[in-house]
Structures are given as C-alpha cells and as structure tokens.
Image (cartoon, rainbow, N blue to C red; front, side, top):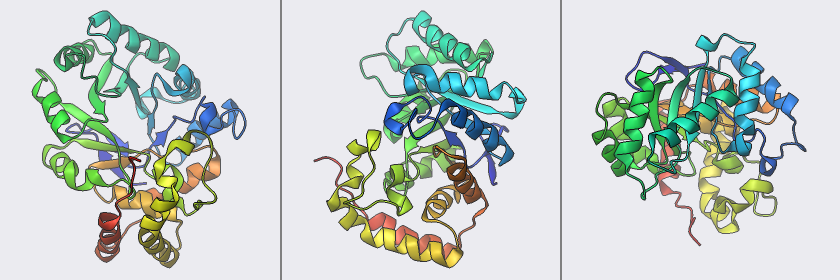
Amino acid sequence: MQYTTLGKSETKISQIGLGTWQFGSKGWGFGTDFTKKDAIEIVHKSFDLGINIIDTAEVYGGGQSERIVGQAIKEHNREDIIIVSKFLPAAIRPSAVKRALAKSLERLQTEYLDVYLIHWPNPLLPLGATLEHMEQMVEDGKIRHIGISNFGLKRFQKAQSKMNKFSIEVDQLNYSMAKSRVKNEFLPYAEAHKVTVMAYSPLGQGYLTGKYTPHNSPKGTRRRNRLFRESNFKRGAPLLEEMKIIAQEKNITMSQLALSWLIQNKQVIAIPGAKSLSQLEENAQAGDVSLSRQEIDQLNVQVDQFKPKLIF
C-alpha cells in the first residue's frame, strides 16, 4: 500500500481508502447483494490490507453507514484509523452544525472525527459562518482537520479565504479517468498548496471496470449515471480499449489500473466502495501498482480526449 500525508499535516493516510456510501443504502444493494455483517467484515479486512482511511456521511443510508462503521471500528485502535464524515449545511446557527456533528459522533461511537467535510456547497447560507463553527470544533477537539466536498477551484479558494485560524486540508471531488476535469483544473492548485484531493467514484461507478456495456448497465443508484448511456460508451471506447491493453500487459484489472492512475499523484487518495471482500482486496492491491511515465502518458492522451455527454 502506498501512503501520503493529509493536507499540510503529518497525518499518514493510505492512498486507497474505503468509501461507505453503499453501507445501509438499498440503491447499492444493501440487504440483497450484501448485509450488515458483510459490511463490518469489509471494514475489518480493510485494516488488514493497509487501508487506514474510512469515508462516510450523515446521509449515507440515513445514518446507517455511520452506525455500521462505528460498530466495526470498536474492535480496533481508534488512533490508527482516519475517519472522515460529512454534513449538509442547512442552517447558520452554531447549534445546527454542532448538532450534526454530535449525531455523527454518536452513530460512529467516537469522541472525535479526523476529518469533517461540508458535503455540498449551499449558496443560500453564509459560508464564512459555517467554517467559523468548524474552526471552533477543531479548538474543542471534536474534529482534527477541516475539509469540503464538491467545491470547484473558485469555490475552494473562496472558502479558504474565509478561514481565520486553520486551513482547509481536503477537497473531496468526483474524480476519475472518466471524469477528469480535476486533473487540469484543481490538481495543480492542490499540489502547490498541499491540499489532499479525495477522489470519490474513482471507478466512474463501475464504468472503468470493463464489466459493463450499453446493453448491460448497472441497476439501482447507478441507473441515473449518464456515463452508462450508449453514446458515452462510444465516446469512451478508445479510453477503455487503451486501459484494457495496459492492464493485460501488467497483469492487473482495469479497476486497479484506474485507481493506480489516480494515486500516482501524492496529493490524491481514492475512496472506492466495496460490497465484498474480493472487491476490497482488488481495490487495495491497486495501492501496490506502479505505472511508468510512458503508461501514464498513453492513458492521459485518451483521458483528455474523452468528453462524455453528461447533461442531456
């Protein structure tokens, strides 16, 4: 497993993490494809594989994800685990933000969060007030690092300018070889300012795995993902073919190649989900894959040329 540091801190984090949107979410097959017992086993196994960062959120499974993670981590040394959670800003009152954090801490059965993120921008609320409350949470020892999610470069810079005592250490973004705007738009800034980019949907929700076709697309939550439209399979054919060739040459899966491409940059960690131990192991093994400069360049040509139609 490859490791890096979180933001400007010295906190060591694995470059492959575990995303847990699927825990408790029927749209991801919870209760049919896998169970609570499976989810807890996945968390336990992730630590054995060198993963030390777990990502969740108050809205995942209506709080079920946090509860499952909280139950699973009880058997492990809390100081060895980096727990990330997120809240949706709905009010500027300090009590509202504190209440959201308190509920997450209760579900997770922990006294603090390593990273707490604003899940989505809310243009109707004063961002500065929300960040002020979060800075107070750091001073109170309730969170260790402040982050945001789904903030593009301009929004991130605006948020950073409103910080008084601390820095925003993390931006969690939809970033993959299939949705690669981050590579040219945000990543150079992240490198210059030591911001950790946490890549969610790093496999394009399965688009980059080679498992799906226009006539065999995933069900549930992913049915709404426009990447799986026939037109986008046609647009993405050169990228998927190049991935297939390189993966076969390296004797790895396309999923592992997609994750490895992301984490070649030390500012990036990937947080793929897993619904089975085999998926988890496949993801974790990507943390041991190295790509040559030539392989990265070959992939980047196709990544930059792939322009999926995601609006209509």
